[in-house]
Every structure is written in C-alpha cells, then in structure tokens.
Length: 348
Image (cartoon, rainbow, N blue to C red; front, side):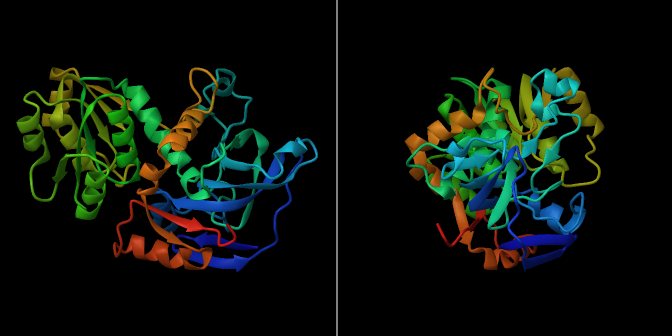
C-alpha cells in the first residue's frame, strides 16, 4: 500500500509498505479521506512525532476491510470514522469516563500510524459507524467538527449570546456554525481574506480582516461592553491579548488553538483585565465519544445527514495521496491557505 511517512521534521516520504494486519481487538480500515489538521503542519515540519518513521493524519474516514480475531465480523464493509485518541482504559481518568484526560493515551497520527495511507489499523473501540448518505469526504471532517462542538458546549453558548471567534480556519468556522445553531450572534476575524470570504458564503456577516482594523475596537463598536464569549483558535499570543481585550465583564474565553509559539505571555495590562472583569478562561481538548453526557461524534454525524452541502464548502483543497507531500509543503510555505485540505483515496 502507499503511505506518507515522516522520518524526521521536514522529511516526508511517499512509500510502498505492507498492508498492516489488525490485532485481535482491532480492525483494518481502508482510508476514504484524511484531512490535514492545522496541528499537522508544525508536527511534520518543526516538532516531529513521537517515533519514526510514522504515518501522520488523525482526521479520517474509511471502510472496514478486515477484523481481528476478537472483533465482530459484522463490522466488515461498514463506513466508519475513527476517534484518534486511544485511551488506556485503566487509569483514574479513564475509570472516571474522562478518556480525553487519559494519563497513558496513544494517538493516531502522532504516536502511532495514522490516516495518510491507503490502509490503517485501529482499535474497534475507536470506530463509529457513519449513517447512510454521508460521503467519505464529509465524514472525514467529523473529528474537527466534534472538537468545535465540544468547545461550544463547554462555553454553554445559547440564544442571545454574542460570540467572537479569532481565526476563520477549519475549527473557527465550525465553531461559528455550532454557535449560530445555538442562537448566538457570531463575530469572526482572520488575516486571510479568502477564509473570511468562505465564512461570508456560509452566511456570516460580522467579519473583520484583523490586519486592517483593531479587533477589540471593532468589537466594542458592535457590542458596547464586549462579547459574552471568545473562542481563541489561533494559538497566537496576539490572539490571546485580543480575546482578553474583547471579552465582556464576567465573560468567557475558550482556548481552542494549540500554541504556535514557545511562550504565550500575557502582558500585565491584560492580566489585570482578567482579574478586574472576572473573566473565566477555559481550555478544551479533543471531544467526547462517551454516551454520557453526550457522544459528540454522533451529534456531528446526525448534523451531517441534514447539512452535508453546507459542510462540503469547508473542504477547499483535495488531492490524491501522490499529491499530499506537495500540498503539505505549499501550506507550510504559505503558498496556499486552505480551510480544510484533504487527501482523497482515488478508489472511492
């Protein structure tokens, strides 16, 4: 099979390797599509993975081709999506049902082989069946869509809230869709005009090019006392400062974006604002596949059944596996600015 493997930061190689065999509690998945996450870019070119060689990619869908000896054969042939975090199910967090906080987790695409290949083996406990009528491309954005849903649920956004989203990338736009569905009024900023144009095509009106106008001043013009909730998706120090400046008294800031700098410093002025305005700052990590309180992946898949055409607009760049390395390079070199870029298996 073909697989894109990382040998060191910046050393991506498209190779022919054997199709892996599933362990007793695993399934073999033929990958239909796998998205490039924003975190994949620094992982591939700067930070690296936990071992080498390794196949990156954690946002993928596929068809179950084979099952392990302890796995039900009724999975064969089913269209599935794959939850990338593999919990140990033995630590205190796992016993509490907090799988995202597992103390000994494994992770597809960074700690073990992921979805930038024609086939991948995954634990059966990590697959979720996809309802009929949803394409492999749409189902491959289940993971980021569930992360966005998790952020909006953590913020408890509701009718009447004003929401600022810093960054109109994949996660930012998906958060905007969920926040709008919850009844909130959405404001969004970015420095890439093309991403703001896509947001406008999805029906969002309060959009700002952050290179041209001071964000917090713009927010104060729209909402006198600032917004109720800020979702910070950029991972940039300036995004954090903007979030604090734009947040209302007793408002909430939800940190979603992975940090893009070694240090994320908060100036004394903004630190004082957190105290004086009693701002609540909350981090979010991944998403929930627990049945209680809510399986966020199931919620996303049900939403896809109703709104597939809406979500398809987010997928702006598609390539076969042979073009995946070049796409990575052009994104890293800022030659293209996709919202969601994706490898599509030519066989689908």
